[in-house]
Length: 219
Image (tube, rainbow, N blue to C red; front, side):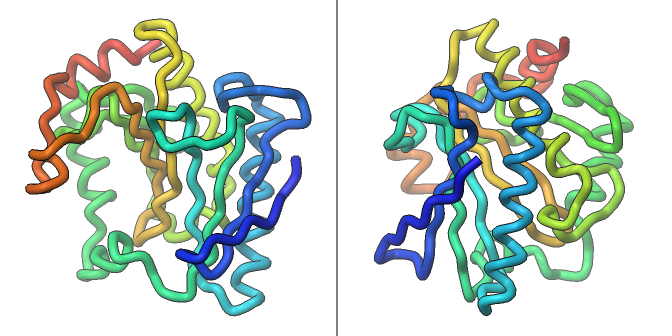
């Protein structure tokens, strides 16, 4: 595990976490212990960022050129931010949408991929692309960087990508930690291209029913 400083003009500070000394291309090639080290690196750097006056850390993984990755070696990017990301800031309205979502989806069951060890994996009812998944702790937790479930969440994301690789071949994908009112990991396989409708209107055309996606991903 190695953290490499990597500054870009658009951000106040950015770092790269190299996931393994061996040449691996995907988190699907990492075992549970290695994914645990990735989670610990994120948590350690979040503590460092906050200590230096950056209260918000954005952590993401890009895999494959179609998902924006510029390096073939599996890695994650950590962006240090002084201001809360707009997507995250919009959640502060007094209610937890993730808690409401988990309650409804567990009651329905058709879009649940896994429900185990205090974490739920589901395919959102209005996913942006085929096989999009949300991975969240069942109990309300506000800070993923302080959660004991973070390593397991990354493990579940890797398991979903492995299963999708069996179905469709290794997919390009984006994964990020959404550290809002109720933290969760969002996993977005890039099996389609966002075109004019998606980019111009914010309406995403997804031909894969989430119920079918969840059924395909269950193992």
